[in-house]
Image (cartoon, rainbow, N blue to C red; front, side, top):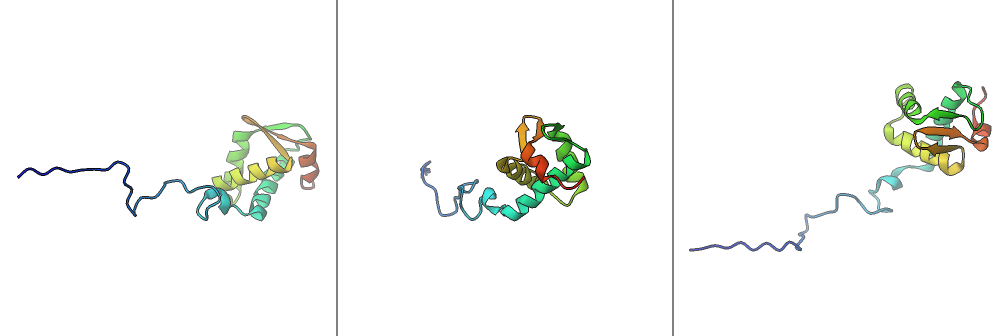
Length: 113
């Protein structure tokens, strides 16, 4: 008795699910970041510029800011990304490859030095 198996490569049973949820879905990572929390992380990034006495349009190495952010705060890597994205969106920082530049708007947002 000879048995043959047939496998339909297009068949996806009920247990198949995409690995990455679609943007806007409940489980998509970008939809999980709350704006107030991103704002808090962005202000923590600005605090680092204030501690270094950075003036408007001056730069800091992005990798150094990232390491210091994770080492000296309660935040995680995801918070750094959310905070940086928020700060760039608000026009407080520009991300220039491996450099972060504080803009005039970001300089105005810096905490008291």
